[in-house]
Length: 257
Image: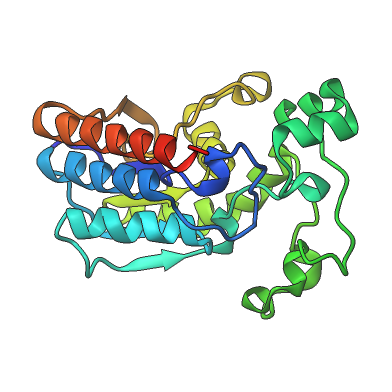
């Protein structure tokens, strides 16, 4: 087995990812391709000999389902799982639920790009009576409303993720546990910024693809000794390519008039 003690994965593709909608805290499911991506991640980790002592994920279904599929493929379905709202995706405020094209039309391409890609730029917040405010979701009822976002910048998301990193992930790593994290584009970016020392300017352009695990070997001070993206090879690659071909074919068939 590789001597990595931390693996981070962005969840598989959802329907809204496919449609290029700003998903944020909206609780959407994986689509068929996303489930295939999750299975491929599990096979990659299993065939490379990875095993874990604990897994962490968000409170959103697309991440939870990805983790469940990964652990099933790895033959580790009973692995202890810790779920944290702090690992949820960035809350996109009034942009949440919009397609990128719709947001660009409504607010202007330059303004939309600034909100989407800037580090400290926050889109307009939703009102407290808006269904998109997490305080109106029963799942978050035990949390203080003031701690729940109505719209976040990338910097805001990092600040939200930081307590999970410091209080949950770091102690597990410090105890010698092997940790798997399945989260979202911006929460993965936040963890990678903490790990890799990525600048505020560079983090905005960091690509985080769905269903692509990244492994880290950390020393006792949690400095990165090495990191690598785990890519499918051999049989797993052929299975992933076949699944992608099926997904493309089914979408083309479904779009016929």
